[in-house]
Image (cartoon, rainbow, N blue to C red; front, side, top):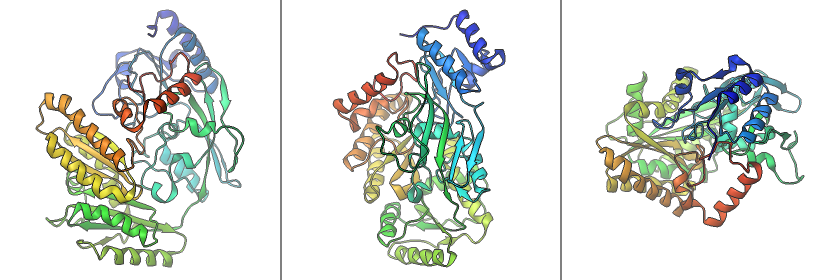
Amino acid sequence: MFQKLQASHLAHFRKIVGEENVFTDAESLTHYSHDETEDLKFLPEVVLKPSAPEQISSLLKFCNEENIPVTPRGAGTGLSGGALPVYGGVILSTEKLNRIIHIDERNHQVLTEPGVITEELQNAVKEKGLFYPPDPASRGSCFIGGNIAENSGGPKAVKYGVVKDYVLNLEVVLPNGEIIWSGANVLKNATGYNLTQLFVGSEGTLGIVTKIVLRLIPHPHHDLLMLVPFRSAVQACEAVNAVFMAGIIPSAMEFMERDAIDLTSKFIEVKNLPLEKDIEAHLLIEVDGNDQDQLFKEMEKITEVLQQFDTGEILFADSAQQKMDLWKLRRSVAEAVKANSVYKEEDTVVPRTELPQLLSGVKEIGKKYGFQSVCYGHVGDGNLHVNIIKGEMSDEEWNQKLPQGIREIFQLCVKLGGTLSGEHGIGWVQKPFMDIAFNPTQLQLMKQIKNVFDPKGILNPGKIFPS
């Protein structure tokens, strides 16, 4: 299907990006053969590190002409296999496009390259009193370009929305090497098709983003945080919608079941976290804003709502350090689970009111197929991460029976009005399940869009669509 790389191809790459940015050594190929998705590895034939859109343009034009597959890669923190070079070929890393070009304080916008680490971008705009809310758990290492590719979310999405809600305009290199801007640097735009939003969440299959214009908002001055223990995990899920029905919109609302807390407590040092034996789950609830008195009133209202549930003693974070510790606990869950066992992570999402049914259903499916699951996630927007632990399952059960169980989990999500992924994307590992969420007509429309942008199929091949 694709052409294997020849010495002449490598020589051409060196002319475009320089000898120092072309890597074929075993160590480099191995490093770029995987992302954070399970234990999957696919060796590329070469790793290229361009530093300008024009170089990417020349590379894509040449690869398109020569029928060489190109897999775009950011920081490699993805959880759906989006950066895996499943057909070999070229890994095109954006790590050298790492400048914050301009922070426009007057218009509350920032122009950035894709290789900027998300937390560094957040810190840079915060110094100007501005706020970029999307904050994935990997914000300290993931790139903003990868966040664009996956339409990332994170804890703040419940109040502030996800990446797509902040992207105004994109500079994109198309698979044939053409460079375009997708929109305009304006808050309202009713001019033609919305190409910008088409690229957001397209997982690097339509083009490579080389510049990003993001809208910003004023940074809130205050926040309050509470950790609420529940004696029933299902009740913790039921409490989520009860808080919203009381008229409160938290800036974050995170769920961690008991196993998630236990595994993370062993993985990192957790100070002063009393954990009664009968506690099944916790909610981490944050409110933010500029009026601290109003935030205290909101916390009081939330506490009143929670009185109708069977909770333990609520912990109110009384210092900046305690807030940091609680957030470190939540953000470390995925890494802790991964360090404990071979695992698979499913990024389920349903309407908030269906969370109790989803959690109960996942546990029942686990009993049916013999797997343990550790659940946590952004329940304020219905996004539950289901980590399936191999534990004592045999290789045969893991490889043959487990996919049936995962299919049932996704079927349950769709039945409850949800879908396959809230923020991790489809990539390589979830594509066998796309038929659950989409009928043949819908899938064909998506394939036709891909074909318009990339008729030779060279850009991030093997992703999203079922084989």
